[in-house]
Amino acid sequence: MNLFETIEKNTLPGRYLEMSPEELEKIVFTVKKEFGSRLFLPGHHYQKDEVIQFADARGDSLKLAQLSASQHEAEAIVFCGVHFMAETADILTRNDQHVYLPDMRAGCSMADMANMTQTEKAWEKLMATFDETILPLTYVNSTAAIKAFVGKHGGATVTSSNAADMLQWAFSQKERILFLPDQHLGRNTAYDLGIPLDHMAVWDPIMEKLLYDGPLENVKVILWKGHCSVHENFTVGNVEQVRKEHPTMQIIVHPECSREVVELSDLSGSTNAIIQAIKQAPPGSKWAIGTEMNLVNRIIQEHPDQHIISLNPRMCPCLTMNRIDLPHLAWSLESLAEGDPQNLIRVEDSIAIDAKKALDRMLSRA
Image 1 (cartoon, rainbow, N blue to C red):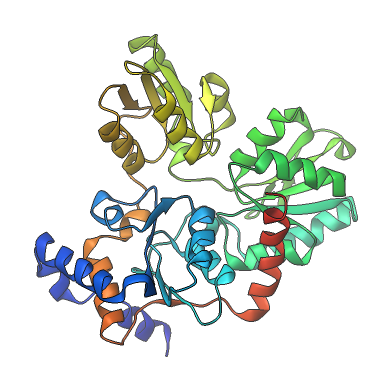
Image 2: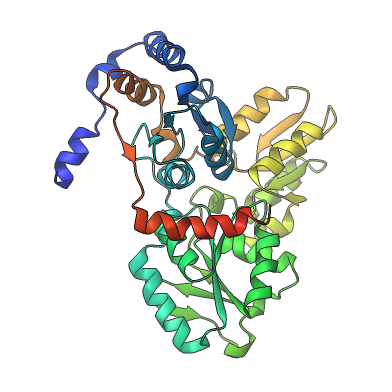
């Protein structure tokens, strides 16, 4: 099957777009009831409300992949997230379990900022410069191929929750770290561990060049020039505006935001850390949250006793996460029930084996 045939096959049939929300919801309810425990539907925190309402579990990407692997009766996992998340679920689940993505266009711009060709070229040049002193780490927000590259070279995956612990582990193995693909999480984590900014270099995969002005022997962390298109849109100007208009409001942001924004904020933390901070805050607390808009809106709805706003009032939801909508979910589940499942996610064994090494090195430290 060529590329155009694949795209055509994976295109949502028009009849689902003509259905009412009630009709679509009925399909989802019916299939979930029919399959029972043979179906597991994980939903990432950034999903739309119309989708997250049906999730059997909510969480970040790694938590949902782990939960998928723990569903021993589940034959099908319909992952409401993006492509790299479904890949991770496939890597961690049994071979007789099948992972599906309701819309194959649901990707991640950050994960796409590091491909294998770029990474192999970078590694070759960095090895020529620094010899065997580098250990690669990759954020779980990366493709299975990048996870496999890291696993093959002795490295591990990290999450925004355990990045500090994993960086400390990595430094116990090698003198330097190559951190893929999000420069901001790498920079913020390394800085919090006491590594000066002038000991961090940036690898530009487009220019195929190390961006660094000082003596090379000072480099401790090499940051891949990648970013989250959502979190990079929170700016110093946003922080200054909130400080001006709401001087008593606390600002909490995700560590995928830039160093400047994190430094000016009151708190930073993973998605779960943000959720827990708001949950544990007393009534009447005031918060500006710097993370994805679907989640911020949901937090606002769930905590009416607090004054909560988005750090950037013009922020849009994650566009690729929003690819998973109610019509695509209904189509995915109905196709599964009809014995013609769509959008199977299957990571090749040659990639999955090394990718699992990277994941297991992290999970063994949990």
